Image (cartoon, rainbow, N blue to C red):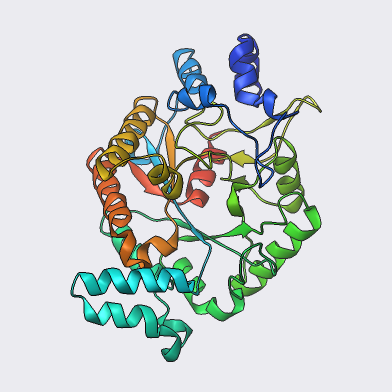
Length: 349
């Protein structure tokens, strides 16, 4: 990786972009203490300028079976128990569609027990992905506190985690809201998940995408994670540091490479639809990002929350996910989990 750093250092603007120099001493943060991106910067978010430069200067990327690019499929499991507002909206939507059975199920699942929650839908998600020969990562919360509501106890869904592993998927940690800057809390959450899984957890993404450059990478390295996939935008889709490839971050304060792989987040469902005026606009934007990534033999990471697949009023979000999978499948993409991307990348670097 040092050769990559040396190459980028020859172009100061790209080096500053790659390292996210301006995030080290931010003038403004949002209400969740995240870096506040300027509107001007967001206008260039669709261009992976750093990856382009590296490819043009000789970087070569390979994927299994000569596939030309990869799609890292991920799901943040924020909720297992649907909030009342979600249940009411989904029930009303289903009733409007004359789907009375689903309308009742959305409201009455509590009477039947946790296993009937519409958000315990990992099998459904994996079935969709399996039809496109794809696998994915699921990131679970184990923190005990949250700024909005109680989320869930990871011990209650142990057999569901086992099914994900049995089907070739990955279970990673979704770091708690108050944990992103605390090595002790993150280690505790990791240990709790590993105790339920009975195996080491290597992948991470933080709740609300809370992240501080470069501190978060150092904390995750210290906690024993092999890769992170938090590094993306919370308010749009695009390439945060001009990279459409996984990379090892560089700490400008220490002058050293950080021993973790970042698989940058590119498209998050909530941000995508918040900045799109229609389904067609959301699709076109996503398609353009896919095509751009493919042109540079890159990796595009997608985040679709599990609640989307259990909410009737989010059917269009599910349809877009299926449309994206079909498009990437037809383009010959390698669609897989963060864990498999990490292992492939690490073996070749």
